Length: 158
Image (cartoon, rainbow, N blue to C red; front, side):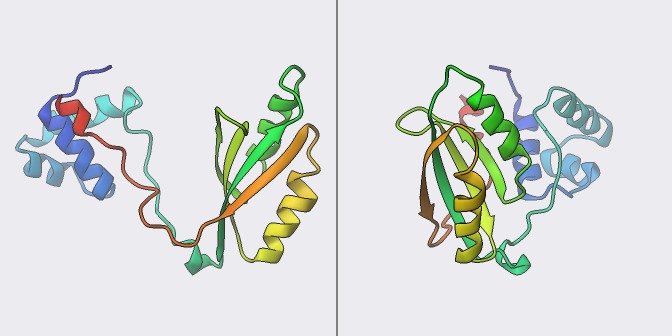
C-alpha cells in the first residue's frame, strides 16, 4: 500500500468534501505553501489517487425517480458471455455502476430510470434479452441514507 503523509491525507479529505477548492486554499488549510501543495496535488493525480473531478447530480432533480440494484446471473462463464455482458452494460446509460460479485449472482448493477414502467422495459426488454443472462433480481431503493460518497481514509493514518 502506498504511504501518505498527513498533508496528503488532509488534502484528500478536503478534496472529497469540495473538489472545486483551489490549491491555494487547500495549501492554507493544511499548512503548506502553494508550490509544495501544488506538487503534491499533481503527484496524487499522476499516481491515480485523484482520478478526476465531477459534479454530483441529484437524480430526482433530473427526473430519475426510480433507483434499483439489479443482480444478474449468467448461464455460463466458460464462453464469452461475461465479456459480451460487460460490453453491453457499458453501453447502457441507465446503468451508473456495475460490479462483478462473488456469491449467487455474477454482477451487481446500479440503475436509475424515470419510472417503474421504464424499469420494467429496461429489465424485460433489454437486460433479460442479453445473450447469456440466466436470471435477474431487482431491489428497489426506498431511501438513500449515505452515499455514494467519500473513500474512507482513516486507515492511512495507521
